[in-house]
Length: 405
Ligand code: SF4
Image 1: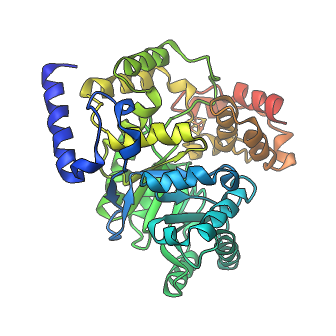
Image 2: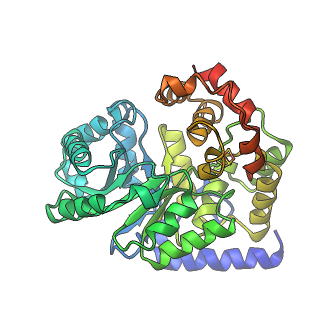
Image 3: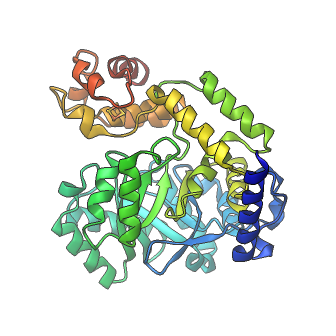
């Protein structure tokens, strides 16, 4: 770190101390791992122009929350009170586990910014799933409700959905409404910014996609429109490279941050938090170790320098072909069959980078058998030519069939 960078980071840290209150920012400026765990408290940011403040770290709950009640309790103690769930997470276990927690600690309900979501696109289906979620979660309202996995905002975000969201708000069932997206994110965000009735969006956003011009413009449009943004998939995990088989560039990045007293995973969170248009990062934190490490990073955000950010950008360029950027309109539109390339890339990512083979197989088998049976035989040449990441799509589709069927 140059003297100038060090000075800038120190001034920024001191400014943050002033804004956050000295009691909430403890430990040394040298790295997240030095923070005093007992005294940690995650700071908040405005969720767009909704008037709501949310913790900058959100608990992703695609795990057995019923068996992890202590983790939920600790999350509240550390101020990680933005909880993201869905009915299908952990086969309904996530919502039921949170419901169990809220039944035991009803006084915590008002502290928690509670989010659930539905894959439905019609009013009747949305109502049915919202009611189920409220029952599972043992609450009578959600702070935010998402239409899940929007990949074409123009066709998905219909007048029927707008009317439904307004009706649910007037009934007090939801406070805010929006959608999640991990495909064609820039296009979805840009369109949402023109609508005037989207309060929040959870989007794939990480050091690999946040530097593209179209994503910068899309985030800017949402920020100006007052939409609260939550980043997910911030680790930018690979669909290709397995655990323990990192590229030389990635290993170099790991060493760089270890030398600075933080993990590369913590540094990736910091890279996203440097963008103050992002209200929060949603991270799957299914162990106390991950919860603690991410909370430490959230509490002490002083460690990233301009040089670190340049290193991230260099690694992103060098490993582009390892990462599916979710631009499914690009590759899927040139295939002769309707193949969910982006979804299959995510299944491979869950299996190879998360080490979650079970989840990968469940989601892969969710794809109709008639489509799965064609995956190995299709010609992907045109799709590979279109792919901005130069991903070996044919090879990966064949590997998905072999590994996940
Ligand atoms: S395979 Fe390539 S074109 Fe298709 S979604 Fe991924 S990055 Fe985009």
